Length: 560
Image 1 (cartoon, rainbow, N blue to C red):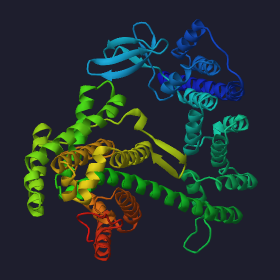
Image 2: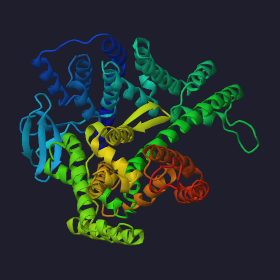
Image 3: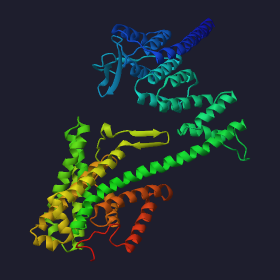
Image 4: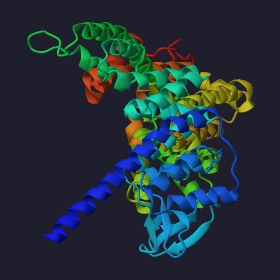
């Protein structure tokens, strides 16, 4: 019995101690908020090290004071340390108590000194332990991290922090957010901070405060803000508002009408951008086929495999330069052009030049070549290969809470337009381009003028194949790279060429962009497969009306 009584008393003392520490931590938050968002001071290396040692102390109160002191220091190392501690990922080495970051490796744990950033080697999994925290310290860390992020000179960090506050509103951080909003100079960050405050205020018992919160939420398009308004405006089966305050519910419903209009505009913009992105991919895939078909009249069923070779060239370059991924993609563009272009010249010289004037034989021959190339790649790597996306292509541009566009698609659109412009300059301003246009318009006359049309054919086929290789580099950043990569785009490429007008670059551009946009707007309504069928039927009907496509090309294939 005595043992039981002592145990109960001990538990009571521990609980009381935890409550006292939590109260101490809470009482320190407003002062830390005011100081952190107004001014920070530099600390000596010895002071910084001493505060870090306190983080590993036995007293949670001492840890709390160290966190507050660290948040007042102007040191770039503080924020990552506190964030790791908040996530329960801050460790100390058992042998000497040095605070470290850890990374799991096969041999155990790789340690990194949080002060110097130097590697301390690999130790066993039991040689480093996590720094313990309780709920009070965890709340203190959340406040300190929020303070440091909102006080940061980096606008992107403040923006990200404000968005995170909207996603997970915390009543204890309201004062921090309000103070940060008053001092914020960026209108966008200030708006998001006000929305985060409104998400907290919407839970208030004061109806005027709630009404003001609805007004603020009604200016936002963030999904979390829209979800709150939807819940306030929701009606039951009897048609009455589920919200107890009818005025608040009606105000939320009114705000939702204007928000839904904005969301519709943003959704249209997003579909348009993704349609242009898809169109740029179709343009890269089809542009080489357009000039090949336009000059030579060859239906090249191996064009998709030229795209595949370009994608695999990107993979090979990355394997050769594993530590230079950002540069390897730039090097892959000329390398893919050379590999696919050389393959195209060899195919034309060895096989296709013997089959001119026999379109069915050419189709069957190139189809056989495509199967051979696919099997050759399977012997190299049977499964899909991993192509790493460089840092500058990763991520997305967050316009607002309802609209974001990935960087890789933006860059591919710009890249496709650059390739189109370069090809147009080549055809208009160079001797090779002049000879290509001459052969396209009248092969017999071009031969009589001394142009070697057979070599023009080889260069044209190589140029078209090389551009297909460049398309493979772009496609490697947005889709899986495997032996069947080219087959996914060959049919679409032919549709673009036929729809735009055989051999016409301007027609190819408009056809690719229009088909990309139409596909993107049809998919949400009809589904991807039905959408493609509708587009195919439309092209068939269009060709019945205009057999030579959008922009008819005058020349030896045109009916004079």
